[in-house]
Length: 161
Image 1 (cartoon, rainbow, N blue to C red):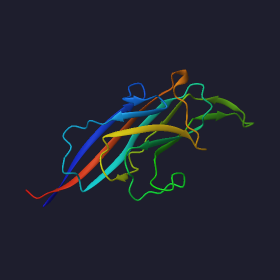
Image 2 (image 1 turned 90 degrees about the horizontal axis):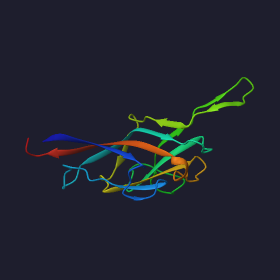
Image 3 (image 1 turned 180 degrees about the vertical axis):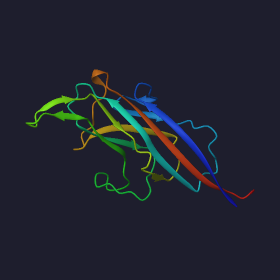
Image 4 (image 1 turned 60 degrees about the vertical axis):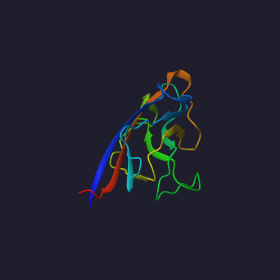
């Protein structure tokens, strides 16, 4: 028996959604060549995320995803499996008196070393961005947008080797 690994990459942007709106965007994941008999272990990575928030008064962004179950995770917000797959903060520059000098419009997250074990590859996923306090971030106004890259590392045992 031999362990075989399939790796799938998904690129998502709220400028091209399948349903919902820019704030709560649902994407159908038509992943080609995935096994119909399933996988022994699936690890998901949020490899990259960036967003342009323009004039929004948001400093910290939680990247939330629903449509799959994160094994071995717990959220005090949902009282169950965690929905957060990443967190990032807006760069803020202050002067010597701690006054805000500049607040950049973009936020970025790179988490390729933060694995999340999930139960199956979802057929669709819904992405929502929220503030640290829990409020959903409105992305419909001001042309706010994001790009998200997910990677699924799927392992199964081949009995033909």
